[in-house]
Each structure stands twice: as C-alpha cells, then as structure tokens.
Image (cartoon, rainbow, N blue to C red; front, side, top):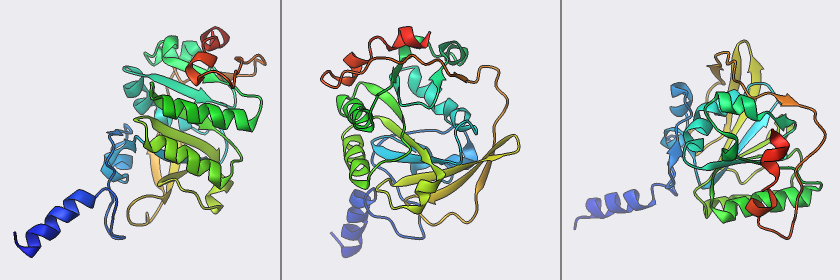
Length: 243
C-alpha cells in the first residue's frame, strides 16, 4: 500500500476526532436535522448531534428557543421519549399535543436542589431510554459539565443544556455552543463554538408563528423527585402534574 493510501485510510478513521481549523469537523454519532437548512449548513454533519453536550445560551427564556427546537423534537418524539429537567415554567401538554406529540412522550422532572437536578440529568443520559434531554441550569460547575458530557458520549440521546447567555464568557467542554438572542419574527443564532472554522457572523432564523407553540404557566405544584430511584421511575407521576 502506498504512503498516500495509508494517509487517506488514517484520515477516514480519525476524521470524527480530528479537524483542521479551516474545515468543518464531524461527529461519529447520528444527527437530527434542525429543520432550518441555513443552520444545518453551519453545523458539523448537518444537524443536532447525539451523544454530546449541546449548549444553548439564552439572552432570556422564551425568546423562541422551543420553536427553534420544534422540528427536531417532533422528529425524535415520534420514536422515543423526551425528558425536560428544571424547565423555567410548567410545560402545557395540550400545546405539545398540537405539535402531534402525545403527553406520554414527555417526562418532566423538577428537583429541589441543583445536585438532584444534575443527578437526574446524568441518570437520564446513562439510562439510554430517551431520545432527547433538555436541561435548564443557570449555574453549573465545569466538572459537572464534564460529567454530563461524558455521560452523553455513552448514550444515543440528543442533549441540549439551556444556560444564560453570560455563560458564554466561561470555558465549557461542550463541543457545540450556540448563543440565542431575540430578533424580529425570529431568533439570532451566534455559533460560539463548533468543530469547524469560526462563524463570521450571527445567523438569523425566521420562526413562523405557531398556534400550537408550547406555552408555560406558573402553577406551583411539581412532580416528586426521588434521588434513590432511577430517573424514569422517579418521574412516573409527572404526566398527571402536566395535565
């Protein structure tokens, strides 16, 4: 075998772990299309990668982040469950049903302490029974982020962690970090970090009005949390709390 052939074979085998600064990287895991072609073109492998930590850094909650994720959540929810840990407000099941996703596809976990929330998210990733995990956490230590990313790497779950925009000023092990800001009839997406070249400018995505957009309320009761049980078991009473 020639030296050129050997080099080409090596490049193919390690392409998902090594990337050049001027080229788009790749993931070994599967990806889910974002539903926005312009965003897919800016992401390695053309979509949301599974088996990794994805950070969505929000200027504030409710700026369109759920509509941004709607196409991917619908695609995942048709086959597997979706887990939400520490959402800022109570999800409305009727609105999710308007997207064509029944209530039994969702698990909602509300923990009293940050440690319990981190534990729950890690157990969801290690359990492997869910297709997507959304985890809202305003403050988290870097070592906790590393644990979550390591747990995600051993799963096939698409894992979004939603954090404040100010977190972009700090280092993170997440291979993909997107900063989201409100924009007229849409959202502005700034790619803070990716396996590829630096993004030259923020990306504007138009978000079409959706009458079935999941809204939130301020009902105070939450699902119980049992740290000593698997995450899926601890959340069995969640659907009743969401109705």
